[in-house]
Length: 573
Image (cartoon, rainbow, N blue to C red):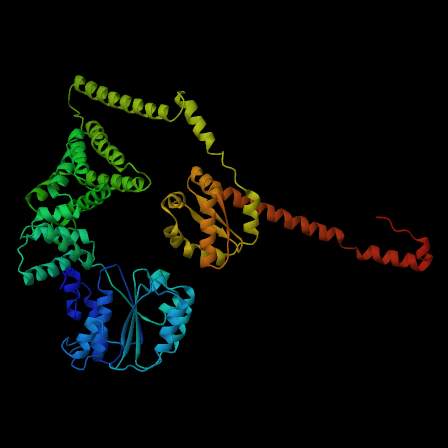
């Protein structure tokens, strides 16, 4: 028989084997014991947290004739058939490839037939959020009036894409990310059963890289075992996961604390040369700084997510001030946002390193200047600060000169400020949307906006990343952008506008024209529309009053007609 991956061989076969979901498994077991099972369940949560495994175990437990305390025996013919996927009464369906109306109608028709071997017919629909709206509507009727002895178990990683009418007819269980401790415990059990030697730190490294997914953890473990020679070592796990050793992170923090820019850059360049992911380095630095902060407060190892509380870590926590750690988290968080829109991530990391070392050195030099020192020392410190300031100004001028023609800084600033008003808003189109805008259309648009961002291509997503829908009508929508350049690109990108229109037509049923407005101009445009509407309303009222006849004048004209006749009376305004 060919080799099987660890996550397939060691897939949970009992509720007690599912790691990190004790509340859910205990609830399902109690429902089975007390015969209070529902006709439909919804299992949601991140990938690899046990949703499909729990569904198959539930199918076995409700049909097993020898179940005890809600657990299947896994020895009878029914349990064995379900485990092997051979029982016709337990049907697993992948909604990603069977998402049409016809497939769901077929399920609905076959659900009316009684089970042939088991007591209950169980339908397990994985990735149910991939069903089309028509398929959901076809499934809704079955969930409203379920046949006897039929149970539906829906599993998904994106519950927000499921209609509320479906969710309200199911019992929902939210599977959470599995803690590193539970992942390590499960891997330790598997390696013990396989009689494989391992280093404890290697398991910790794999558990952190799995980010709460047991399947991901076992896949990484499988790869690490193939890479290692006999025993699983920490170095093997580090290479497979691309993780950064704690010693390097400690050395980087020490370089920041001691204001050694060159040392910090050398560590950074060495990591990048080894092929480490810059985004992973940023995440590790944020978590490592967070661990240092918490350890300074409580000295508890259980709160640590990234670090190991050894002597070097404890010494670093005592040495580094909390202010530096706060600044590291803030700067790297900003760097993380900037890296998403750039192809040169290492440049942002270099800038962050220089910023954290040199800027803090200048601040500390100024704040720790001795009050009782001589005048010469103070003069030297002031001169050093002036020199650093001059270098920073020179650097900024060089950057400015590279972006355009060599002009004085005030003129450049004036030009850049005036360029913000270049983009002209199509106020006519905006007013046309606002005249028919409704809260319902805007609310519907905001609900589908995150999904729209996921559908767009990477270049289109970069343009629409800072967009916010602010008004919507059945025929159009108004979207604001934080930057004028993105607003202009979105307006001129016909491919992007077509993609948005086609998606909205598919999801909400009608195509809407998108009008882009800079965020800073939106309040002005909206206020102008309100003012115009008030003026039009006032003008209409005046016209009505002018057109209305005066009752007194009508009475005089009538009397004149009676006295002189209509042919001799001429009415003038």
